[in-house]
Amino acid sequence: MNKFKLLILIILFSNFSFSQSVILESFGPSFSSPVEIKNAGDERLFVVEKSGKIKILNPDGSVNSTPFLDIEDRVSTNANERGLLGLAFHPNYPENPFFFVNYTNNSGDTTISKFSVSTDENIANESETVLLVINQPYGNHNGGCINFGPDGNLYIGMGDGGSGGDPQNYSQSTGSLLGKMLRINVNSGAYSIPENNPYGDEIWSVGLRNPWKFSFDSENGNLWIADVGQNEFEEINMVENNPANVNYGWRCYEGDEPYNMSGCPDNGLTFPVATYSHYNSGDFKCSITGGYVYRGNQISGLNGVYFFADYCSGEIGMLSTEDNSNWEMNLTFPNINGSWVSFGEDISGELYIVSINGGIYKIIDAALSQNELTLNNVIIYPNPFDEFININLQETADIKIYDSFGKKIIQIDDFKGTQVDLRNLIRGIYFIKVDGYQIKKIIKK
Image 1: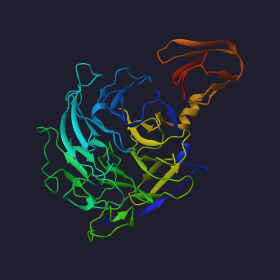
Image 2: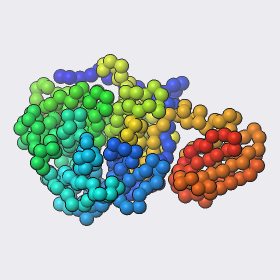
Image 3: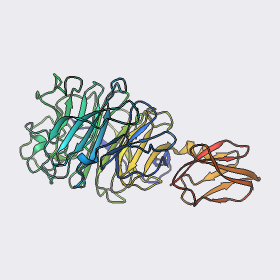
Image 4: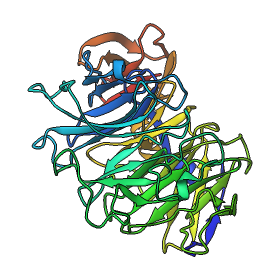
């Protein structure tokens, strides 16, 4: 039994906590039910909308008018957890110009397909090569996340087929692809089975309930899986170096508590490194959304911290450890509310978070943001703003506001007041310049 000792600290506000080290900054306009965000090895971000579209979000916060991909005619969304759910670019993209998606087809079955980019790097070809179709007996627990691992193979997170309690015990059955982490080689024909897959088929590991999001640590290749719980516990799994044939324990255990021991192995289960209850404290929690281990450079002191969130409570969590034995987990209220369904990572390792309600936000260093807002006794707040922005000055100055294309749209001469009315601006990214000081990016929610 491989079970880490847990130290779970729920800290909402204290003298020091992770909650004080990061805030959210609105990044770009609203999307229609976004569920995934990926990069393709450059500065663009690709936002997956549940209905079947993938759109390109540019570094300046603008969105291309033509979708990168539109397969709405092939995607079923007639159940809450169905839709276009996952995206992964080939590790050698664009030299190898293929990308892969995970969606539920019009029969409600999980479909893994390969697409290619056209001669225009911002538009994909809509013809597809279907690699794998997996029957879904119910409308929920489809999984949806796909990622390439450090070994170059494509990993597919599969839920247990749905209903409740995994009534057919698919997760523990090696005769089913449901409730598993699958692994395939997409560089051989349509795809092939890697030689060291433990059962000679697509299965890499077993015992998962609904691994809605998983990721690989870009520094060491460790696999992180956030598995959505049944009645009470959400769990975070981590295995070093991603070994084969791991059994994560569902439906035998929910988190590290027994759930249904019928047909369970006597040993060999790998327990989560951290769990949290739906009823710990504060708002009701219900569904974990996994993220990434932070490996960027812009947030001080958080290198190696794993980010996750809860869909119902709107809390954003961070999990850290020094020696793989004592884990510290924080669930903290962000400065912006959201029903969090995904995280994203850009080419520099900076992180973003996605709300099903449409918002895309960048996770930034709160201390850095405060330093940027306080410029030689010029204080600009709040940011992001809603209708008004406050500018505190010790002397009069000219104020200029530019849109994301560099066009000046507002100028106020000899400004000495404290509040600027920006209700007429649409949602998006702007730049403000106070004469004599540097330009500052501001965001309207």
